[in-house]
Each structure stands twice: as C-alpha cells, then as structure tokens.
Length: 339
Ligand SMILES: Nc1ncnc2c1ncn2[C@@H]1O[C@H](COP(=O)(O)OP(=O)(O)O)[C@@H](O)[C@H]1O
Ligand SMILES: [Mg+2]
Image 1 (cartoon, helix red, strand yellow):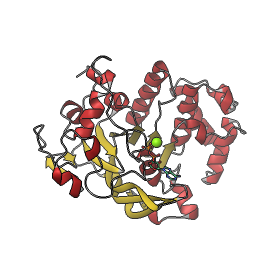
Image 2 (spheres, protein in one colour):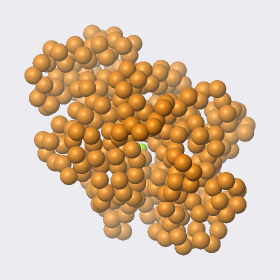
Image 3 (spheres, helix red, strand yellow):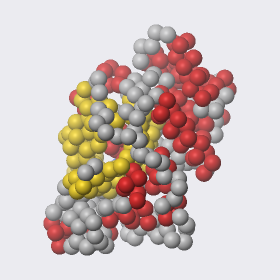
C-alpha cells in the first residue's frame, strides 16, 4: 500500500444528504429496454467523499446523472428512489422544481467539463444565466461568491469571468466547472471523471481543490472515475461498480487494503499507482460488457472471474454486509480465495 492513502473521515451515524435506493435505469435499444444500472443503492453523507469507480461502461455516469433525475433519452429511471435531504425524491420531480434542485442543492460537474460550459458565452455570462434560472435576486452577491471561489481555486477571477471556454486550459475549465457547481451553495457535489482529460500535475491540483472545498463546506461529495489511483487519493468511502451493479462498497482504506470482491481486486491489481510500480500492475483480463452483452442471469462478472463456480451461472449475487460496514455482491468466500 502506498503512503498516499488518506485516513478515512469519521463516518458514524451521519445522516445522508442523498440516499439512492434500489435504483434501476434503462436505455431503449434495438433489443428493447436494457438496464445500465440495476438495483443500485448508495448514500452520500456530509463530510464524506465517496468514490464511485469501475471500468468504462459500468454505469457510473448513468447513476450519477440519476441523482439529478437527468438521465437523457433514450434512458429513463425505471424504478427506485433518490431521496435528497430537504428536497424529497428527485425521481418524482419535474419542471421548475427539478431545475431548482439541479445546481441548487446538487452541484454537478459533467464528465469532460467542456460539456457543462457553453462555448458561445463567457463564463461570467453563464454565471448570470445560472443565477437568473435559479431566481437569484442578488446577482452581484452571486458574482462576488463566484470570484471568491475562483480565487480560492487559484484562478484569476477577472480573467476567467471574461473568458470563453476555448480560452481556458483543461485544468482551468475543470475548476470553473466546480465554481459553477458550488456557487449556489450546493450541499452535494457530484464530479464525473474530474481528472480524466488532465495531465498528472493538473490532476493533483484539481484533487487538492476538491478536497479543500469539500472540507470547508462540509459537502457530501461523489467522485466518479475509472481511475482507482484517483479514488485512492481522495475517497473516504468507495463504491465499485460493474455491469450496472454496485459489487462492493465500504470505507475506502479498508476496501483498498483488503478488497473483497474479485473485481475490486483485479482493478487494484491493474493500478500502478496503488500496486507501487508499473511492472507489477497487470491489465484486467477480458473486456467489460456493454448493455447487449451483459449477462441477464447469474453474476455479471463471472466470465472474467477467477473464482467463478456453478452457482455464479445461475444466481445473481445480492449486495450483502459480510462484515460490519463492508458490502459485497459475490458468491465466493469473502475471506479466502476459494468459492
Ligand atoms: N444514450 C445511451 N443509449 C444507449 N446506451 C447507453 C447510452 N448511454 C450509455 N449507454 C450504455 O449504458 C452503459 C453505461 O454507460 P455509462 O453510464 O456511460 O458508463 P460509465 O460512466 O461507467 O462509463 C454502457 O453500456 C453504455 O454503452
Ligand atoms: Mg462515464
């Protein structure tokens, strides 16, 4: 284990800012509606950074968008609930009430943050649009707060507010995305692949900033990433996703030091930053499924699993608490390497 691992925050009995229960999200395809997220549950608590990790295609972005009830067509939330403290079940909201929650209670930074910025408007103009769409009366106050946030993130606020997205570097855009996500005093910050397009130095800077604003504002933060190295640096809790399922979750340090699900072990084994060197990091064998190749019976990971046995062909393992605070969805013995 490397020294970069953070000590987990104290997590006892904090009430959840966001509680996702039994969430299933489907996309319409040539073969009918297929699930990209299946019966997923997750809780985001104030003061905690949750890392949601898994290979590309595992359903992370779909789950993250569901928190805002913003899954784009041809997708839809088929069942389950997303309770947000002080708001209610966002899967039941629509129209103006839903728009107010997005960017209001829930701050969201899209995957490849370019998407969240309008290329045709300066950042300052977009900030004012955001304020107006949320019926902010004190627009000057809003600009002041945006400036403060921007300066705290090491940005030149004057310059950034006058800039178009193409005039900003990837790292700057990512920070602007965070400013816009937080400027309305969101209590929940959701970041989808916040470091993916960045070089290592900008990655480290963005993660430092996320950690700092998270602490200062006592946020409930969700970081979605395919990169185990990223979550190992910032997450207090870890949820591992595969084939639309959350297959393991628990305190980050424990999951990283003693992964229980064979998929988590494989992901960690493939991460040079955690294993300690590139020669020992082994690529994950096989490929992640897409919606059309995903197994509909049995365990979704069994084709790539070194521990697969007959039961894995037939029964989809439920996510169960196998030891206090640790959850996994696997038929194999949680402590040993044997089924
Ligand atoms: N608009 C869409 N239409 C059909 N399938 C989609 C759509 N968006 C995503 N998917 C499928 O849903 C699955 C999960 O995608 P996504 O949530 O983007 O995963 P991740 O963020 O983990 O890479 C993938 O198999 C993907 O191909
Ligand atoms: Mg994604």
